[in-house]
Length: 217
Image (cartoon, rainbow, N blue to C red):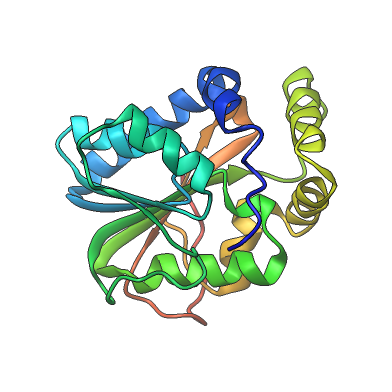
């Protein structure tokens, strides 16, 4: 974890993305409340906007990220709360089943295929049996729309490596394809970001290789 690709853009991240991502964060919070989760790990938490709001809502939430610049923003936004840690999402420093739920919002698409699967495996590992893994990310195979054009432009501006991983993510059927590739059943796909993405809600209990159940909205 030496290079920080977010060092230059950390200060712009929330001003640029909040209008698009805050509704997704509300959806995550509402879904966690419906599921009865209390202990929540926000993986790839970035500036901590979701982590902090979950704590405001009464969740025992912690946030982890690999970017020192993003974590500095998180700690500044939520001072006095020792709930943010720098960790590699592919090998998290928590025991098995430590949380009721693990969450990743718009983080997996920017990673290489093997890293995506490793991060998803960690989300399941640190969630207790009977808990849930929530991943908000892009859907694939959608018709052209102005919002889709804007999303594609934003992903391209994030850099060549990021954009290449994004395109690969879509080619592999987006968030639904990710769970299918991991052999993890998805109970619900809740549309978000104007229908360009979905919040996948997956129960923890069935291991890899289980049949992937049809998702409902």
